[in-house]
Image (tube, rainbow, N blue to C red; front, side, top):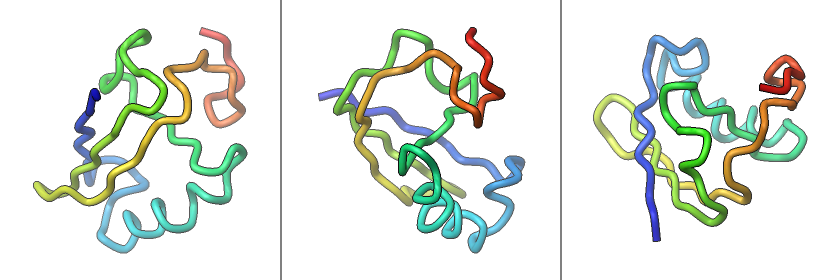
Amino acid sequence: MHMRLIKLSKDDKDFVSEESLKYYFHVKLFTRTPSGFFVFPKRHIAANALDPDERILFSYQGNLRYVAKTKTGVEKNTHPLLGGVNK
């Protein structure tokens, strides 16, 4: 089983504080279609490097905070959250 570690940063507008981090993972992700849709920053995942059912570990301020499992691998950037652009 593969696992990826994603280091979340206070430099990202969604993670500027502990409260914003919790809001993102407990509320915002579940308002998306599909529910839980997460957009990885470009520098984190190569186009062919993510498999279905892969574990994703999210750290924040040096601590492991969340663990998730992917439903799909990397998909083309056609989702509205990504500007609907096919890259």
